[in-house]
Length: 387
Ligand SMILES: NC(=O)C1=CN([C@@H]2O[C@H](COP(=O)(O)OP(=O)(O)OC[C@H]3O[C@@H](n4cnc5c(N)ncnc54)[C@H](O)[C@@H]3O)[C@@H](O)[C@H]2O)C=CC1
Ligand SMILES: O=C(O)CCC(=O)C(=O)O
Image (cartoon, rainbow, N blue to C red; front, side):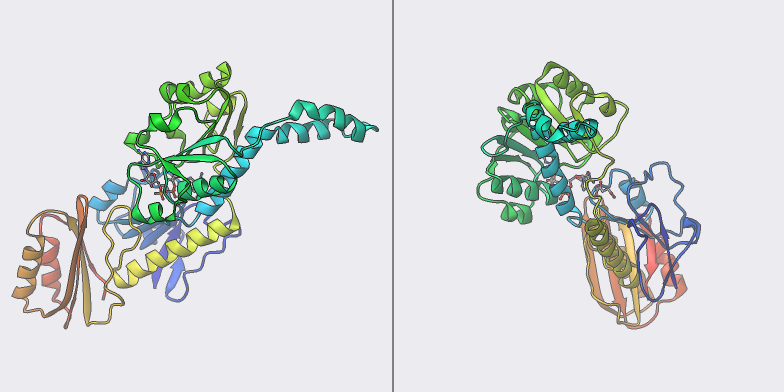
């Protein structure tokens, strides 16, 4: 039996199924792996027994991924699984920020006991006149799973769409409409935009990337949308731009002490991925990643270890070594296997950044002394006997 600890409500109705051979445990100390969402694990006392963590969602700024890599813990996310939900809410917020819909509905509620409300609403409506998205210039920062879908949808709405992403993947470049015009700098993207929408991860080079300088380049009365992370914007600069009228509206997903006090602002409760479909998609992807890793050692969609797929573990034994990406690891591993006279059927070595993964199948079970010797190689973080 393999043991899973869930942190956070993975789905609204609590529906999470791993199937036969798995159970849910009350504490992380009893668990082999963690399934989670947005809880901040920085400073969390992660038990030694945890071998993997799957984040149901895209952003992993709530997890110390490099520290966990050095402890031999593979961290997964679920790329793209919630991107449609975010796209739809971003479109909604762009429209709400342009059309006085909320103000108009509030007027109706406030005047509910007016016997002439039908006629009076006709007179009141001029206060809620807005503008259309069609024909306006929009900048999309980050053209990954969410940004590329948002950009394409905005093309379909008739907007003049510009995109900025110096690290765009081939897959997302292919998925992008030909009508999205790519620009090479953030400043060129911002210049003259009526709308700017942010879809980059929270990391050192995106922290505060939208500040006074970028906001100054936007068209007067522009709308800013931030459904990425609170760290991407300089909140004081956004507040000042709202007060000066440079920004007519700001919509964001992060209720910080500063955003909740800004004028002309809609803030939601980190609800970009808040649909039953997105929750189910993320949970399904995260569960299958964890199961394949726990049962077969295969890695897909990890944010701290390379992808590796050797199929189902069918040989007598399968061993996985998580280690630093340094020279001579294969040499050291095979020297130890040679001493045990082990016949290796198949071996794969993959690396990503500072971390690497070596997995091999052997015809017979290895001696415990061999496993112990592998663990003693200085750059090895963890050795897993999968089978
Ligand atoms: N509000 C919510 O509920 C949700 C928020 N998010 C946030 O949105 C972010 C993006 O999500 P996805 O599109 O799924 O991620 P993704 O990883 O598919 O796309 C991120 C894109 O940003 C680009 N990028 C990275 N650094 C950049 C930089 N300095 N300048 C411009 N582009 C840069 C990457 O090349 C990539 O194409 C996530 O990291 C997460 O923080 C994601 C899903 C739900
Ligand atoms: O789990 C959630 O609702 C948050 C989703 C999110 O922010 C992400 O996927 O990065």
